[in-house]
Length: 78
Image (tube, rainbow, N blue to C red; front, side, top):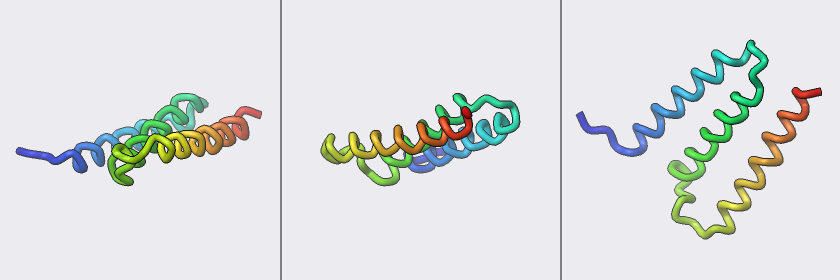
């Protein structure tokens, strides 16, 4: 059976979501943030098709991810 890249990425996103959901009640914030970062990277690279975009756009989205996920991590840390 053949699965294209989009289907494989979608399955990976589902698995990461299930892992995050399982870890949610166990105070493993850093793992959840890591899984969220990986999911965001996959969405940005493959579904938004920014893998072929100029580096500036990718750096802007990476910076946005750092601000958002850092803010969430700090909010739950204190």
